[in-house]
Image (tube, rainbow, N blue to C red; front, side, top):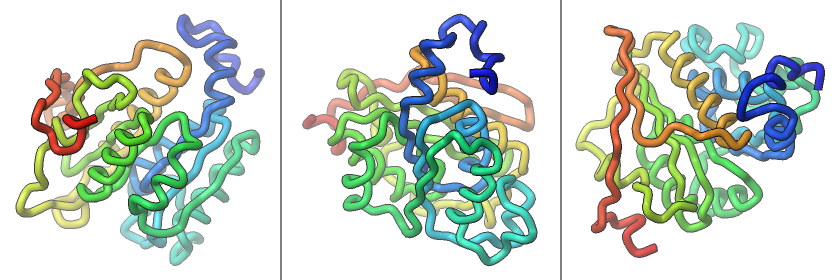
Length: 241
């Protein structure tokens, strides 16, 4: 417990919360700028098991914001490079990886063993697939995204049927989806949103009251807004569950 001693005095965590974190398994979909920041705090805080899911390799344009990677990792699979970095950070965490694009089939295989899923991908279709799988399995998950100077976070609780799902909040995909390379992303914004996702995850696992609703970060004006999202009775993903 010495490694995590700073968490022991905190109301809502203490030894019982640390043990819940130690016994938990998180699956993280995407280990780019968001996932790198979130994974560091999860592992340094003693998460028991972390499964990293990504299909991509490390490129030079990643290095400004994807802080698990170094120049010596260029060309390597992100899953391999991330695990090497995280093992050095905390060898007590059990680390696993899935290298490839995540689809319904491998989500349905992986997620039942997890206490929580974090989606840190940059793909709307992947987030919808995570939403469907977590709804079907009743597994809580965290949506984290960022672009330009903006970040968005939401803890979704399919185990609480009265709460809105991801599709309730976002509806259909827009006609044109922007990505970080095209629209740009300020590197610290990815870190702030990723660290916030780790905060949501650790607070939930420790048994603390996790923030509800959709949380929007505007780095230009240094402003957070929180929105209550009502459940859509006609949602095609959750209304029939």
